Image 1 (tube, rainbow, N blue to C red):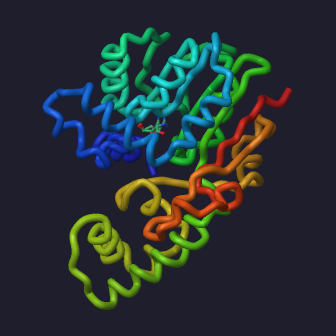
Image 2: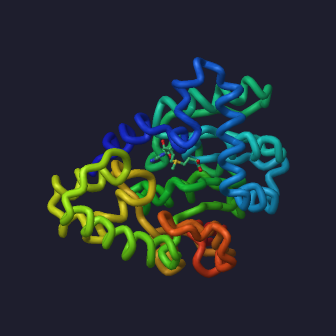
Length: 282
Ligand SMILES: C[S@@+](CC[C@H](N)C(=O)[O-])C[C@H]1O[C@@H](n2cnc3c(N)ncnc32)[C@H](O)[C@@H]1O
């Protein structure tokens, strides 16, 4: 897998925009687009704001890796950070710049590039923040060394990674979605949309090959065309982030589509979003 495949995917599918109808359908009314996007995001995932509220960004030189529509960027800047952003695509930095201009927020800068090799000096940042991004980077070991290099001594890496020990991975993806797909494949279902794309993928790759978890996981987190995803428990975090030690971690967000579980109370144990705070090893 090469990085241009991943870049191409995110360039064509700017993170989360489908949920509010796609930016191109707003006829350049970005104010309305960002407002709808933020309402959608923080209504569906209100815990993100709670988690951000518990991080002290005030006066901290902060690099955010992987920007999407810039919703969290705006929140981080409003909480006092001297904010810098980095994203692999051209589209995301362009949108984030439009958002921040509209909101008249000052920033350190936005860079187009990859976290695998970053154009920043050693010891430049107090915080590196990355929500829902590093599990999409196959070269994670090199990436974490880069993050270690650009963090100041005593700096902090704060990440949200998909959780392996979650209802979504263990029950929905591993069982419900696989069984559903087998049934529809055998019954020769002919549908469009997300399920139709999975059926097409299964025909192209061969059903049993497609259903192997090492293949299936990629196509079951951020759409049926997503080229790469990984799920984490803390042991896997320790392995992939070997230059860091874990300071604290918590799981949030009950999410296991197609199961209607959003109101279940077990997010601490079975939540899909694993937030991890890490410090460089000395
Ligand atoms: C799932 S979106 C998450 C965006 C945002 N943080 C959020 O929570 O909505 C992944 C983002 O990471 C970016 N990305 C993927 N690989 C990257 C890399 N190697 N370096 C920098 N950004 C990357 C993508 O372009 C995309 O904007």
